[in-house]
Image 1 (cartoon, rainbow, N blue to C red):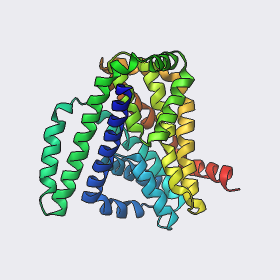
Image 2: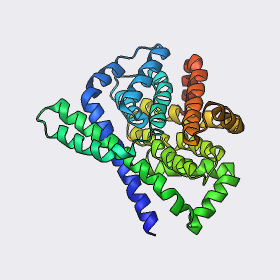
Image 3: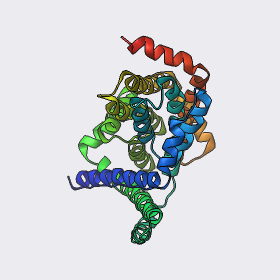
Length: 306
């Protein structure tokens, strides 16, 4: 019971850290990024590059999706312009996954102290940098907590049974990734949790990749919720995000074993293998769809315009 409560607290710390990091970075560059996003032309590759860069800067594909849906709902972007942005945001999100593999939890407390110091400086840039630093430090503190609790949690009968089921049933691992991400609204947190169980050898990279794929579907709920109450074009944008990830996951499901073998050739670090698998999935999916972005937009309109 104590471990479960502590685990929930660390999840809250991770989500709060992501929010602080995102807010700090947005205050530093958000308005200029928003202007760039609103001026994306009809060329899908320009939206693709813009979505990749902005997501990499803000460390959140969900934030970029919410921003994109908002711009569509007020008429600053058309639905067709968002396809490239969506494709790029999926790639930009992998920056966070790769970043989480760094073992920096020992710098969490010094980072928070330094962040508070910057927040005390009466200047908006300093305060924004301090907020981002506090958020980043909280993320690494939470990841350290996940790793510490992976062993004790896996000894609990319910968790142990779930981990065994995930290991033996690919679909259950996929559903777990979807559900957990939909609940906590963060694919990064879900992948971070999977990495902690990987580090303790409670699950295999194979199961971790299945959870990661599920998290890419679960993260679509944020953009969909942002589209509720908006116009039809905003809803089309949310549907495009959902279809992109669902079709991508269905395409990659038979190749999870191949992804596991390929990433094992790149590194022996299991958490890094999962991060690399996330990069492979998002890059290949987005690059394959990019040349057909206009046809993809027409498919969304055909399926949902009624």
